[in-house]
Every structure is written in structure tokens, then in C-alpha cells.
Image (cartoon, rainbow, N blue to C red; front, side, top):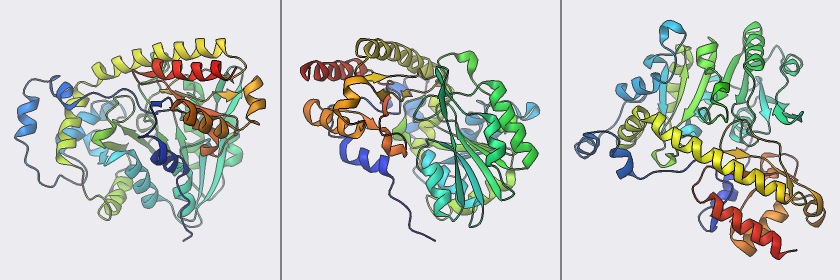
Length: 384
């Protein structure tokens, strides 16, 4: 087994995230305090204080799995049910355990590109051949062409891996595009793993896609409370699938890493899920307002950046344009490091996704987004 490559994006954040004055590239939404969360449900504070701090079940507390399953269709209409939910310590552990349980040397995996690095690096580390399925930036939107998937698949393809809504572009397939992808996977008999961590942050809620675990019998959905709910500190994520054999294989793997999740985190996650729409509504409104601010900003500064509008998530993927592209030689990392040194504003270079170096990620899910954007604009004005 070859050495795993460093997770460049996470190393970048480890160096800068907690020292920058303004995080203008955060992928998560605004968080709330433990006190605020507990106040959403009568008796929740007492329940937390009375909680015994022993081990939890490997697959997650039955009550938590029921709360998660309530967010999907019922088993009678294609949903996974509580038995089809497997709780993890965040989304990253779930990604690792899924691939360890399903992919090995000699397999082939198709992964949308650009992608959060673990979605492509972990299967490559395990010895699988990885083919990028490139998003297109055409006609005013980012999208995956379902017709390209047929060409990318091979007899050795074990899984197709997607992230919808997409990090970092904010792309969101139409229902027709998504159904075409599912049908191609069904015809070829391959797994379809969909990172759905931004589900619930569609700019048009009517565009929300069914979860892959509802639409496809060989689908595996990934979700977490870190993004739409803004509760990254809980470290609670999950897999949802109708494939009991895959979840059984994941259980074997999990015995070798976290074993189980934190009891207080599972308890608080249950409170959050029972109040999820209230939390999500607040963050959807915040994202819509902040994105409007950013679009106005881009309109004022066409010599700094161009933007293909996201269709979902709390992030977008603008690109250097005009004078800024020339000044920084088409390298958003050079721009981002200068911006950080001179103003304390942090942007994420697109090269950390292995993508066109002109691009950079902007996150618009935080309450102080306007302050950070004002600091960026001042920096631009001061530089002339």
C-alpha cells in the first residue's frame, strides 16, 4: 500500500484557520451554543446533565438513528429506516470507513472533480484506480454531464462518488440529471456514494434532490450536522443505505478506529435533529442574504473576480479576473496569502482541490460574512 498523500486543504486550514481575523472561506454555516440548542426542547438540559458517560452503541444510539431516519422517506416508500442508518464521529470517519469496507486494490472508482480530497485520495490509497468526472462550467452553471459517466465506467468500477450540492462550486444536478446517473449505475450494478452534507442548503428548496438512499437500492448517502446545521463541534455524521451488507462491513472497520461516538454528542445531535428545520431555516436565510452581498460585491469589482452562481451549499468558487488575474499571474494562492498578510482575511485557493489555480473558495454561511467582505473590499481599494 502506497503512502497516503497529505490532505492539503486540511493542512492549509490547520495553519491559518484559528489565527485569521476573518474566515471568508468557511464551508460550514453559523453555529449556536449548547445553551441555545438545549433551549429548543423542554427537558433537554436536564436530560444532558443526567446522561451517563459510558460507551455508546457502535452504530449509534437507537433513538438517534430513529431521529436521523425521520429525515428520509419511510422504509415503505424506499427510505433506509433506522436499521439503515450508521452513526459516525463526523463525515470524515464515515468516508474512511465506507471505502475501507468496500474498495480495494484492482477496483476502479469514478469521483466528481474537483472534490474534497478524501473522496478521491482514500480509494487511491487503497489501491483503486480513480477516474475524475469533471464538472463543467457552462451556460451559467456548474454541472456534471450524465452522458460522460458511461465512458468513464469500466468492468472493474466498484463505485461512483458524487458530492451534491457540491463542494466547492455549489453545483446541484437537476432531478433529470440525477435520475440518469442513478439509472446508469443501476444498469452497470455499481455502488453510488453521494456526499449529501449540504443537502438542505439549496438556493431553491424546490430543487432539493431525493437522497440517493431513497432513489437507489445500491446507494449510500453521507450526511453530517456540521454544514447545514452548523454544529461541527458535535462531530456527528452518518451513512444511510438499504444495503445492510455494506453497513455490516462498515461495522467491522469501525471497531478498529473510533468504536463508537461520544454520548453527549449523540444526545445533543438528537435535540438538533428534532429541531433541524428551525436551525436550517436560519442558516438558509443567512446564506441567501450573504450570497446576495457577495454577488453585489463581484458586480462592483469585475477586475477582481468572476462568479458562476452556486445552486446549493454555503460556498461558491469564483475565479480571478481582469487586473487581479494579471497582477497575481493567475494564481489565487498568491492572492490569498497576500490578502491574509495584509488584511487578516482568509480565502481558500482552488489549487487545494487540484483544480485551476485561478479559482478560490468563498464561504457565505457565517454571520460575520459582511465584515469579512468589507475587509476584503478595503484591501482591494487600498491596492488601487
